[in-house]
Image (cartoon, rainbow, N blue to C red):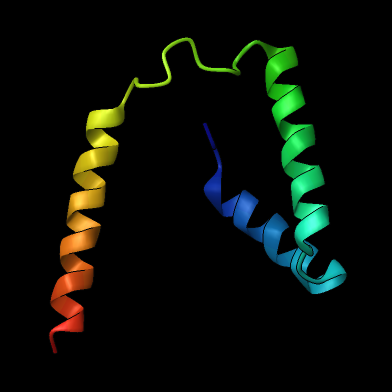
Length: 73
């Protein structure tokens, strides 16, 4: 859970400005390292991977309907 989204956005912007965007292999390495850290912290893998799926489905329906409506214009 992100407690300070403004700080995170600032850090991301500074990183991109100084280092540039990550390529695929760098992104994959970062993801892998973060996954390992999550395992070490005991938060990954989730105990029930389907927890919260109802919310994800509702969001997907809304986004898909917006996409369909915008493409009809």
